[in-house]
Picture 1 (spheres, rainbow, N blue to C red):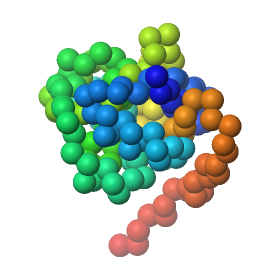
Picture 2 (picture 1 turned 180 degrees about the vertical axis):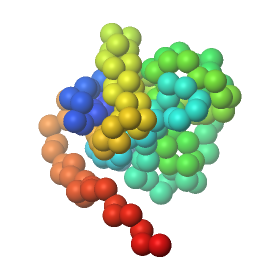
Picture 3 (picture 1 turned 90 degrees about the vertical axis):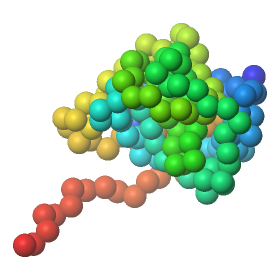
Picture 4 (picture 1 turned 120 degrees about the vertical axis):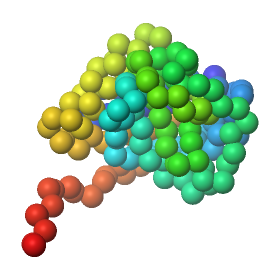
Length: 160
C-alpha cells in the first residue's frame, strides 16, 4: 500500500493517507510519481468541510478519471484529484454534489487530526487570512526537497 503524508504549516498537523490502486490507478500513479511538492491550502467557502490545493502537474489537466463518485456520499478523509489540478480532501459534511475522482483516504486514526487541520484552514480563510502551506510527500521519504514558497505579504491597496 502506497502511503503519503500531508502536512499543513504553520499548524504542525500531519496526516497519513493511503492511495488506492483502483478505480483511478492512473491518477494515483500520477500523484505518486510527482511527490514531493508543496502548495497553498484553500478551504471551500460554501460547500462544506472540504480542503483543496493546486497540484503542480500539467499532466493532470489531460488525465481523465476512470471513475467518479458523489463527494457528498464519500467517507470523510477521501482524497480526490481533478482536471482543475486540485487535490481535494473531504473532512466532513458537504452540501454540493460534484462528481470527483477518488484516489485515496486518510487513515482512520488520523481523521481527528484532519478535522483539526480543516478547522485551522477554515479559520485562516474566514477570519485570520493566515497563509497555510501544504506539503505532500511519500511517507517515510528520506529524500529532501526544498519546500520554500515565496514570501507573502498583504498587497497594498490599489490607487483610485
